[in-house]
Image (cartoon, rainbow, N blue to C red; front, side, top):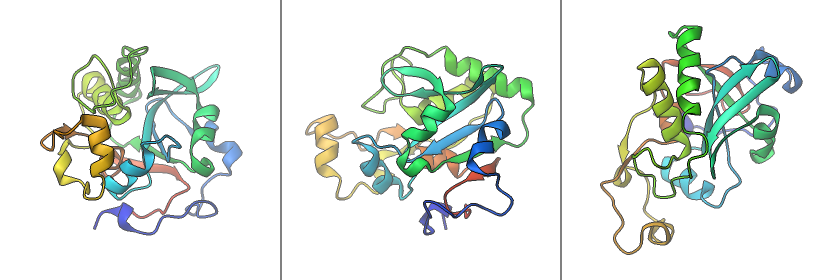
Length: 205
């Protein structure tokens, strides 16, 4: 059973040994993958389709000036980690780290992600490089920069889209591309090659 089918907890459900919130930024490493529950209008449909509270994802870059997140919103941008975290619902966050990659490989993934800065957000969740959605950016960053694909591409009709017909028509018109292949934040989070660094969500995976 997928871990996100378990009841997830907002606050006060930290796994044993987790550091206090104020220490979290100090624990981050370049290449960490961070998830939260977005406040955007599409967040709820994404949660329903994936049966997961994780509706947005980005990739961390740690510098002498602090931690940043490269993310695909409108447009693809690089933002302070503290600001990124605060944007999520109740500040809840999941931080995952590749287990088998070197520091250099993780930096290469971030460098690949930054080549897309300034591109528009892809509202249609297509796979071209002219526009990016959040999980596409993270997936491609690791594929292009480190040769590793986290998460998997799934057909739109393999997700729980029943009941989301109105939202899909608003996005695609009358001909919804149910054979569209996309990668979701939940798919990346379910990849067992990523280890949990910190979580405000249920620790079950």
